[in-house]
Amino acid sequence: MKRLTEFDISGLEDPGFSRAVIDWQRQHGRHALPWQNTRDAYRIWLSEIMLQQTQVAAVLGYYARFLARFPTVQALAEAPVDDVMAYWAGLGYYTRARNLHACARRVVAEHGGVFPSDPALLADLPGIGRSTAAAISAFSSGTRAAILDGNVKRVFARVFGIDQYPGLKPVEDALWRRAEALLPEGGEGIESYTQGLMDLGATLCTRSKPDCGRCPLQDRCVAHASSRTAELPVRKPKKATPEKRAQMLVVIDHGQVLLEQRPGTGIWGGLLSLPEVGGHVALDEDEELDPGAASEAAGKFGMVDETETLLPMEHGFTHYKLHIHPYRIGLRSRAEIPAGYVWWDLSRIEEAALPAPIKKLLGQLGQPSLFG
Image (cartoon, rainbow, N blue to C red):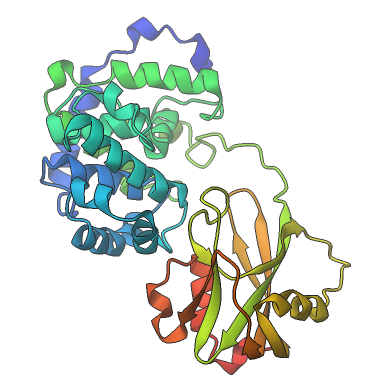
């Protein structure tokens, strides 16, 4: 099979490809998502950022709540970053939220509160890459610009029989050239074409069990013809997932829990979380954790009355698995807490900008099954 990097790019034009995608999307694609049927670049941009590495079903509720709190880019730009993080908490990949806030401020400061229609200008803003910029511009301004997100890479890899990992730079560059060549001539139907590529990858050409029988590209699909849909796209070579552990202090006093503001960058950047003993360190299966160390570490917050070991939890990041070992600490009396810490009412814990596993842990504090 011919390798992608050997293709003659000048011969990649195929008007029939875009026509098939456009016709299919208009009849069978998604048309009722809350960020569709609008030219409002703010709403389109917000949806595109939320949908990065996140499924539509998970985004819907967050999108509605976020818009209710920040209805315009000006409102978002003027809001404290802590408020933005609180409304993002649980959606994951928190760099997106920090970039969202920074981007809103730049749009207001540099573009008068109006998102530019030029994809190159959009791509210069925080958190907006080349593909996202093209999607925003296509949906808000009808710009003829190519997208190449994960769904589109999967469609292209199968339809054109790409037998190399799409994440390799030479392969991705060639995919971009193909994406540009396949754009509808003159930009006619660019919105339906762009949405159609997204819809095909999300609803038919899925990672597992693709619905080839309903795909408008079936008759030109190399993977379908050669029974290779399970093999394509080529998966990234797997590496062993590192494992780390963290000892966390659940310091409880008079219906309040002690929370720590995490640094603006890094894991859970900018969110509140539980105080930790020693941070995230490499997991040693043979290491026996000492509850006494947790009690000693909690001493700076007050006079410790009791320490209880809670059941451990696991949380998967993209680049390592974290084993959380929590300890409930009861205080006899409080000390003055250091800067960066805050006492938070457990009755209002849902309002705190917490990582999802920490919010889950605190929400279960009253359940006996949590205790070891």
